[in-house]
Length: 499
Image (cartoon, rainbow, N blue to C red; front, side, top):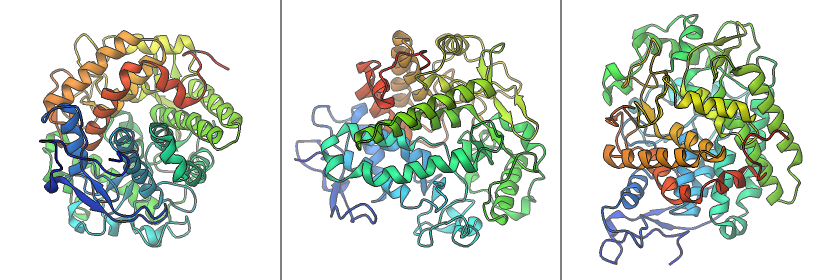
């Protein structure tokens, strides 16, 4: 049985027909024909963590992509799909490829990958902002928005090239047979060009986000100061669908949500044109967003080498971006990377998990990496002492709340990134301990969207796709120590070396 085209449920040694599905051919990436999709667990017993994670991904599969959760997030999200593909590659490399290809089919002409690709079969009132709010095919026409699919007009962190490379190496034969990398490389390169040229709003070489939703950590305290300049949209002008699925005390406040809506409205009404520093609005250089861009630039170099080029220019660009990241966002006295408010050209002194994500970078200066590790295990994040997983915000911070969205809870994708960073920089014992805590918490929380960092109590949606996907990746990859991280960047460099 071909594991790349069929995932087989093993309960009693036969396929469970209730839990299989047939997916149609996919436009834009070859005629692959019908593909049976279920879960594959040939050696683990029913009820195992591996099997239950696979079942979450099967349950959230739409036939062309995977929703983060059926209730709260019923469409395709950009960085979710990248993390989901990283886990799916262990079940079906084909489906992992299709996950990314479906997302890239919605790419805009200017290179941006939208943060949401809307499923037309989902009712408009199931999620806000809905397609009729974004009006991508009309308001985004100048920027090259697709006409045949509705999307949002903002972006999310660029994890995609990293995900594409990891998907390729999971089954190089299938990838080459389908010309996977050669077809998506131009799209990924255009995505990076957009960020590096259209979004260098501060002029220092880093990409800026123009909305908190773009950075992915929507409600982080780092946004409070720049958001305070934004006049909120009237509460009567929108209805929050998120409160149908989560407690109000765990979600962003109505005031903050009104500001999110105002920013998105102004961006849409400006036809999604990217502005310049000093204008009214929101523009922030974020360390995690740029670290993921750098990691994906290293991955693009590796993809270029696979396709017969040298990749040298992309590695050089990644190293220049790493230097810019340290120059513009590193505060050695505080031992953290901070966001920079482009409008005021000042750092925002709020300690969030975003400031730890650069640990993922292979050419981060050795002393910077060592300082980040000390901060991670110090009183502000308390990993291994007071917390079982890395919290999203400073435990001693004025806005800390262990349950409120991105103001304290621990998230599986950021912890996965930190775990890889620890391995890359030689902290194998600490990485292994964090890996164990992640697997245990995913198991006991029902693959929760996020958890209380102290207790692991489930918060948000259950059966969350990237939690399940990254659980699978940790189960497959972590014992191999550092090799997968160095390979994905294509350098084999030891952590801390600047080349």
